[in-house]
Length: 260
Image 1: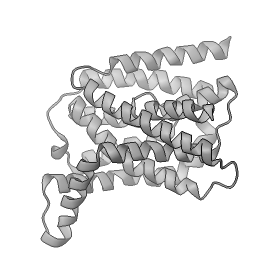
Image 2: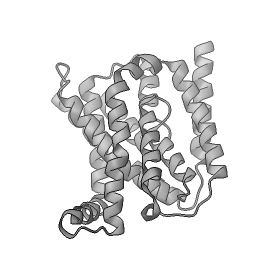
Image 3: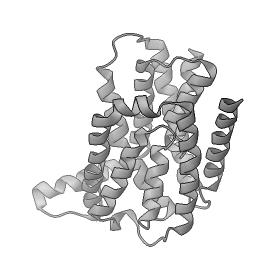
């Protein structure tokens, strides 16, 4: 029971802060010899996806309502356009995840590669934030730019990269400011996180524990809500430097543990 709670907290925080949830869970499993069941992972994903649904409920209702106007009125408001851009941008991650997901598990789910990805992409993230030129909002994103962010999101299946980090960095590259980059990242992540959780439900064959999975869901849901709100408020006045420093330090710590 305790494992479900603290792992759920780790999942909820690291899913939305740009530090890699899969990387953290795998490193924890490696360091502390913790076994994380498939059913628990499913409920982690469901918990974090429901935190997104709750936090952005008004946004999604507006986006869906305006997006569906296309079929009745043959025209789109800016919000309706964003809705369709999000759906299209979700496709690369869904396709590549479905094709390469299992193969990536075998290739990259190792402490050394996770450490390299955490530190290496952390430094790249720092460079991107330095060179990015802020000149647009989410409503000004075009289709190629949305697909660029969506394709970048597909790389988040590699542990240590971080879905949040790579989509935010891609948003900065196309000219979004920090707040808009974070918001688009969160909106874009809902379909893929929810879809991943729902698709894996059918793979659960054993190890299902109602109490443990309920705690996994609740802890990841509540910590996810906190992380979303924290990052949304934080980037209004601060850069991503603290998260980059954290990634590099964790990377170095893992490398030291491996070498020693």
